[in-house]
Amino acid sequence: MKNKNETYELIKALIIGGILVVLVRFFLFSPIVVDGESMVPTLLDEDRMIVNKLRIGEYDRFDIVVFHASQRKDFIKRIIGLPGDRIEYKNDKLYINGEFFEEPYLEELKKESLDFITGTFQLEETPGGYLEVPKGHVFVLGDNRKFSNDSRHIGVIPIDEIVGKAQIVYWPFERLLIVNNK
Image (cartoon, rainbow, N blue to C red):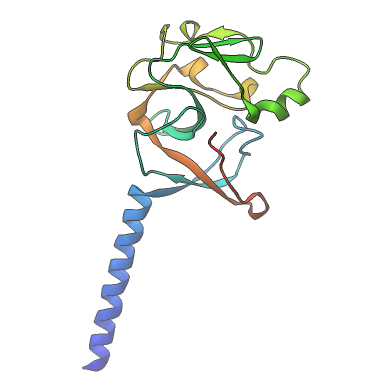
């Protein structure tokens, strides 16, 4: 009788544990693998990381987010523009609503490049032709601007397509870091 109760308790614990893992995986945190070089040098191809799904809908400028680019593909990019923002780049310098913004995460690439890495463009020159980022959307760019398929090509991103915010790179172990979203 004792053996039967122990087996029952073990099965019950495994089921509860499995349910908790599923709930955490689908509603709180999700592992992803960076695919490509669009976020170099911040994130590298094949980095394994954790995406925080908490606080969905609460995003700040310069947060690194994962979003559904299509039914089969998720992208990871940096939020540059929030709803209502007017975005403009002049000679590799970011202006939001006419105010200049530093992008320190691009310094390493700028040192290596003999040319502009972002160039010059305005939001209205991107798909959709918006004068400002529409309500319920964000404008995203990859850090490796020359090799990034981002809002310059696919347009603004609906906030409800964002899966979550990049938080921790856990593999390769020597790159273990908490992602600085600012």
